[in-house]
Length: 312
Length: 268
Image (cartoon, rainbow over all chains, first blue to last red):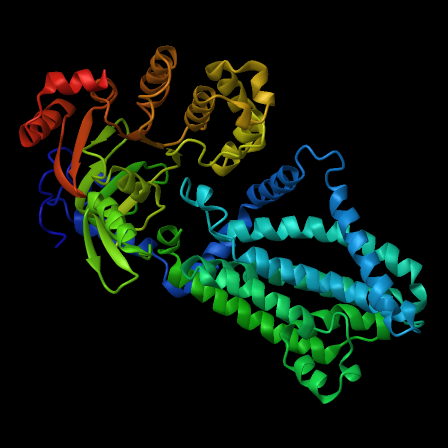
């Protein structure tokens, strides 16, 4: 098929006769269709690896996604007098409400419960954001995807950085709350446990990268998924021990607790601070989930790479 | 065998593109309208109820080297925009070989790749980053854009305060200032006031044309004749003819039996 001369093109149609010329300054003009085809093939990446390559290429363009992320935040609070402070204010209101109502529900252990909810909610919020915004990773950026050729992962990094800035503000509020209710934290707390917790939070943020690509692709192809996940996340909020403890609702709670992946991500942040220990079992579970998630997402991105632009 | 690093080229061989259309018909009227729209682009094949595919391009073959300025011509829906997207690497062809070497800048729809609430300067910066420029290089580039756009202090304003014409000037100035090797434009220079058109044409010919490749989809004959040295005529996604601009238009007119005077009056 490649040997048939180009039909209608009369100018600079690739020369088919010069097959074996290997001069140092070879250009497309002097190459045969076969040679060019070989060249193109040599540049192709296997679909299984393409996704990982995309993630790597995207990572290298950090200037782009950091700039985009800060633009996003500026745009969201554009012309708002208090600007980014709104993130802190709304979060403080929310936490305050929860602590006042839920923390007070059972009477005693107010400080413990406040810490339990505050830390758990901080971790939950980041995961919830990643999933519920993740469904729009590509649909929201159609404008850019159709204008320039960028690694698709750039948009996930962008969202992650944006969420990290959010997290930093939320964490500030959380720290204030934790200081107020410090009686609820473990008395044996050392800098090491705090580092475990912070590390766990960073680990969650790293995971949001693949989560956003994963849901971005699925929701792009199957638009119902966006609505489905928002419904599911609402359900999972109740299934995840953010507000409740497993031992308080019996065997039933135990099952939900054990088979809910979100539980483990929350526990790796919460347990070091509340029980002053390294949650080894939970870390093992989240590591497996993360590795599988990352691999599946990478393969999925590679396999759908060609199609994403059409699905927009 | 491997071309040198700095090589700039576009090479297409039997490139075809078929893409899925997911628009699900909600009622009868909607379905036929969808189909009518898609029908302009090429042939529709139905695999099942909800997925139909459109053969948007078939067997496109050509190659371009630095200095080439190709015009894509043809009726609405002939596949010009799709082909530009294929060249930009946004759409991957479903068959055939394609090799595009060089940094690409695109001027497709207005405002694409621009942030409406960011200032003009900020958008210049973003675009330059996208094109892979270093910060030091961006400063030079900003000057160039300032000169060309004559927007002055407006560059400090968010671009959603710009008029269409101002936004266009900025878009064009940035896309050319970043010195791409390949510039892809979809229905661009035809719009805008006479002064902008003249300036833009000059910029195209003087500062850009000899170094790179440009591909312009346009209905504006005068413009195409002035700017381009080659033309590719597309009809329903098929490559009808590729040759010098004058000849291609002649063939096209013969084919459609269009009275050229009338047509020119339309576009003048």
